[in-house]
Length: 414
Image (cartoon, rainbow, N blue to C red; front, side, top):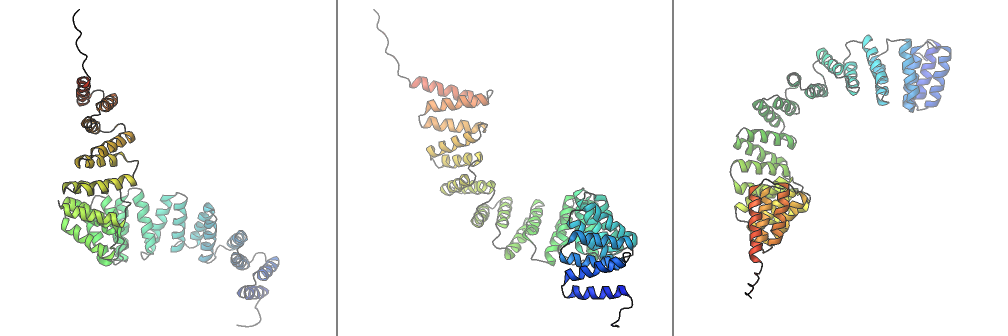
């Protein structure tokens, strides 16, 4: 290159670029502004000035410079439209960003990145039809889009319950990326939502085949589908394969517990739910309740009570936890403890099932607290005035109370 510029503008541009390269940004800006005073209609000067201002962090001025460059010469390179659109997006000037990308597409109608960027901003403004159209156009122009374009387009379809369109989008992506393990689970989800369970199972299985290191949710979903389809051996094999990769995942053991219930394997239920609780005590209440129930079936009353006590400690506002604890305590003949638990259940949920009132009333009578039983039955009857069982028990309790009173000696005749 000649050391002498071919024109004064070239001189300004070269000197300012040298200052920019040496990170002397203030001096570079001053030189560009001086040049613009002499050449106010030169788009290259505004474009270069915008670059330095953006580098300096003066975004408002950078935006102004880029806009001026485009106004002077719309035949700018696509990077300038993309850069200006991104700056506007970052500042949440979304309508202006959309206008910038649309202006770029007037000049470069087949530019993939402009279609992608316009789709992204259109989605942010809630213009979903426009976003979908832009992503579709990008794919039409070149199916070898980055996978995020396919994922985003499919998600937009799915959010509108356009499952067939979402499925078609993923299938197109798989024609381009047949070995992309992340596409298969996503396709499986929408396939299940569309009612094709066998297809969902096949897609999840293929995703795992391509990448056994899938996230646990993929294994969990596949296992659930297999279980629901009564493919219990396949579900078990799936969970066991997952545990080789994620051996400390409590949800996998929880799912194995569910599977063991369906296989009528009580020992498996107990083993897997216990392991799930060891790994993560923050299990949902039903895990505690089911484990305790199966322990009772094995006549392991003390262990069942311990599980229920842990449940009420973790879920102290859950009336079902107290009801079930009371039942286990009653079965273990821990009557006073059972009474306390049933009372707590009723305090938390006065509309408890009638059997809770009836059981508690019977226990109170067994403890010779007839008065307490009568008060309980009366309270229950106010909530369930038409229940014959409550009325019957109340009547019997009142008779017991009458019979327990000492009889007055007969008065002698005068």
